[in-house]
Length: 104
Image (cartoon, rainbow, N blue to C red; front, side):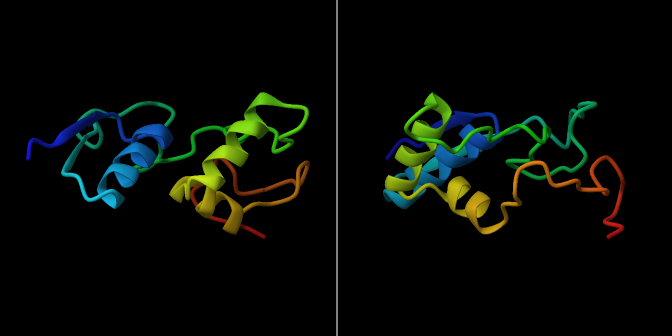
């Protein structure tokens, strides 16, 4: 069977590749890093959050982004599962953001 090619290992590309693999289909995920670096990324890994506002609102009744979150959870999203497991309350100051290591 011919593999499905996904371009980009960000949040959407990583989720798409995982969902395709979960469906039992062959998938190839193409990512430019670590060969090509960006100023925003700090690692060579996939699905790296580069902005503290990446997930935005989780209000599925008043916000389109929240509705998408709800739908992704209903579909068994790996990204949303990880986000839910590691979420912090809004407006919490995270002193290590932008540094190399946590300093709590």
